[in-house]
Length: 428
Image 1 (cartoon, rainbow, N blue to C red):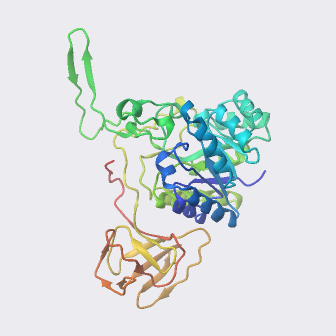
Image 2 (image 1 turned 90 degrees about the horizontal axis):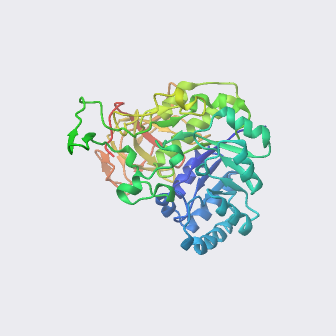
């Protein structure tokens, strides 16, 4: 069996580049409202997407185009034009969610492989076979499926590729079939504009219809009212188990609307876990070190390796989001000689470097600063904060738009970060 693919989200051109540079084998993203993430779809132009495909292909990587929204009748003419325009960019596959769009893509762009979105909710051999017969070459399985059921599908349809989510936000509803956002704000989840209403805190009331009385239920301080808030998926410690099952072709990371840092860290952590498996290594602390550095809602391994009724830890009732273990202080620009400040930096602060895949960095000390290795990790300490315009700063903050000089050139999209107090909650 071929080495399992690592598939990362690409919310815009920069995130696409970052995910690829940090180890993703393929990325997925879309243009326009026909993508199931409208916000990230608006961040991509057709020109950007074409440039992203070229960037990936030069490096031997793939790009899957998302046309996985749920169109209305009034949009079908526009949808046909969109499919043809996306096909001209030569993506490596098109991701679709409905039988009609699957059939339409097959007719209009028969040269491009079709992947079936997780929104189609495939859980069994019967459904998988229907979509396979319709032309789907890969199925992104429903998030509620088990590894055992995936292997049953693979046994029946050995030529069908299977893809599963291994990391990212979880929906409290069954495979995203939620209308709370529609009810409260008119933003339709399954048309790409979910407002994440399940992440809000709610007050609870008890009503007596016979008397018309209404009681507000008081809760003990600190318990919280995040009654629909699912924890984030994290299967990094189960990569070995998933690969050895022999039925999964691609491990997918959720998060097209998340940060540049998220794109980098998740790609790096899962690339490490996958490579370790093939090298007969297992370093759970290393994967967790990276993933815990991200803002998260608490982590769960969800349902792929455990049955749903066996899980009682998939909700985060106390908070909607907490800080990770690290704060991003800066990101190296494309020229590699300067970085942009993202937080606050003082001279002689010790800043850990998060480096792209296969990055080559060496120890050095000069007038600008020191680059050094400590306990298997790379750090930089800046003696002076010299801007590109030659001005020296006593400190820099995220509002300072002056590029700051590095002691030596570093790979583009290298992140500078510092530890923070874990468990700090973030308002959303």
